[in-house]
Length: 78
Image 1 (cartoon, rainbow, N blue to C red):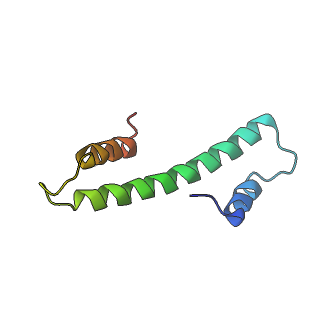
Image 2: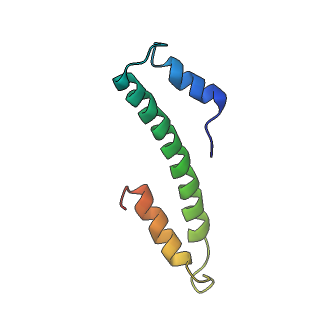
């Protein structure tokens, strides 16, 4: 999921300068990273909830592994 132009502009303006230092550029990059992570987490959470709703015995190959991997990702585990 991509960040909208408006969201990127908001993040840029939050830095308060047009002449960014290296440190400010890293802050900007981290802000973008955090926004993307929130979107990723939301999608993974939806996936885990949808897969978790499948009744045991109805799982096709890999569903249990996908649920486990999704939960691990949400908990910050590799």
